[in-house]
Picture (cartoon, rainbow, N blue to C red):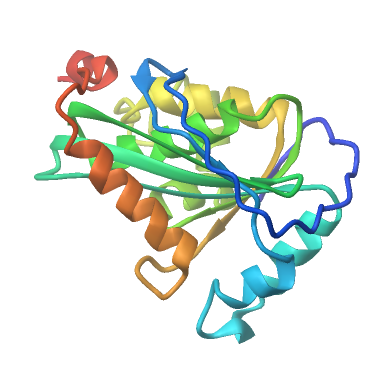
Length: 223
């Protein structure tokens, strides 16, 4: 499902081979994130590395999206023990630039980290964009593809049985961002030979092990 939003002006993807690495300590939704920026190799070569079974059609979809000036985002999140120490990671490809972000919390859940990954990545975009967001979280993808989000919002963020929806703070943030950007969520199987998906998993795991993690206030309030 595509969340309706503003459309970004098309920009030709720059084919740049030079890699530039920068580090930043910017805050993203209350967390310290390590930021890595580099220029990807020529798009077709980069895409060839993304999947061992290119017949799934995703490579072609990514290539078309980037060539039309869109943004491609890979995300992942996890929590050790669930709940427990958690982290999220995302890779953002836009305008010939590749960016990695990550962050974590002391006490949180897998689902909250999956949502945080999407939110943090979309918040990095400087202007309204057309986004292809690739996630291995069925929880996130199905909320959009099956219309759960709209149903929850109509019911005052309650499920069909009247019980409160879990993680309403994050769903509301994501919903707000999807009204700014035009976002298509695409589900993929995790740990299935897609390097950028694996990289997001590594970023999330590494972030969860940091020593300066903050508390996930949304999770603590829910408890």
